Amino acid sequence: MTSGTFPSRMIYLDNSATTPLDPLVAEAMKPYLGEKFGNASSIHSLGREARLALEDSRNSIASAIGADPAEIVFTSGGTEANNHAIKGSIFAAVKSGKHFDELSAITSEAEHYAILEPMDFLESLGVKILRSKVGGDGVVEVEGIASQFGKDLTFASFMLVNNEVGSINPVKGLAGRVRSASPNAIIHTDAVQGLGRMDIDVKELGVDLLSLSAHKIHGPKGIGALFIRRGVKLEPLLHGGSQERNRRGGTESVALAVGFGEAVRQMESAKQASREQVRMVQEYAIKRLAALPEVSFNSPKDGVDGILNISFTADVLKRLDSEALLIRFDMEGIAVSNGAACTSGSLQPSHVLAAMGKGNEIASKSVRVSFSHLNRTEEIDRFIEVLQKIIRD
Image (cartoon, rainbow, N blue to C red; front, side):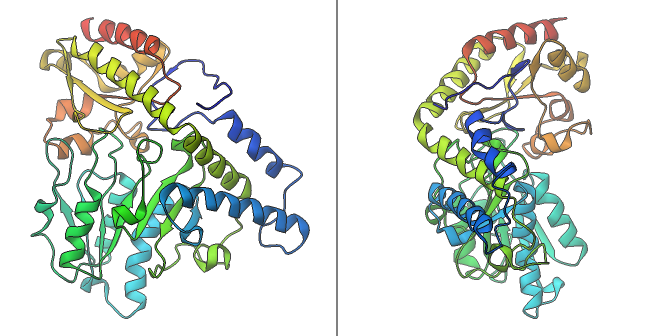
């Protein structure tokens, strides 16, 4: 398991939002924030040193997902990777001579907003956007999408792991279904919440594009990656330079890329022990929560280890205020959330839980707890203690 300490002032159970930076990752980045400051595009020794570090990180990320290093493009995070995948695919089709109203794309109603909002944008340009429903478990059914599109589908995107409830989509089956009906469609998956929690192989999944983010695996914020399968045509999202093999203009952030690469190496080196710890903590949490009559589970039993979404009985829901709920936990020194961090402060019901058929009260007042290998069962005991105080007041 990763060495070093991760200081925190509170019990941190919001690892789906972000994870604490691994001290070994910070140490690996430090030289590239100081004396090794070269531009990776420069040909002098400082530039070559930066280039070697950049490519070393690219190699580590590629190896972790079964890709070729040349298929990895660094981005500013998962949101940019998703936007690049979606808009880049559609804009490439337009550049080839198609009109927006001749193009179509499919996704699900339970995706992250970094998928849904780019889709909305494209819809405003005339692209036909199909939104597949999910079941009560948050999973997109392979057979359920079959009747939604024809052979002219341009693009498909289905997330690997749902960030709010932990549902695992059958991406391989979904990709196969899309491919059989629309052989020319570009297939993407947002794997931001899957990296570190499960094995990922882009060839096994059968996808053309795959999004990743460093800060979900104890890496730095501000850096992500997009896998672009060799031969796939994608219009750059950022123009202005020949960096990243002409796929993303702009000076590369070497320090952040180094941090991403080191986070991946630490993840891979301690993979089994880390996952066993997360699984043990989650199973303990489920056991403790299941003993509370006021609590119900929104996360499916076969979801990914590390994400647990809970709700409450009707009488408890009536007494709870969604904002006050999280503030109470915070005041007790516990960090949890009620869904995606990108919607924090909006007080809007979870679109994921709504898509799963949950009522407005549940969609507004559920709690997501998400774990990393740093969490311990004693923290769960404290969480349960505080939860009981809140729901029984």
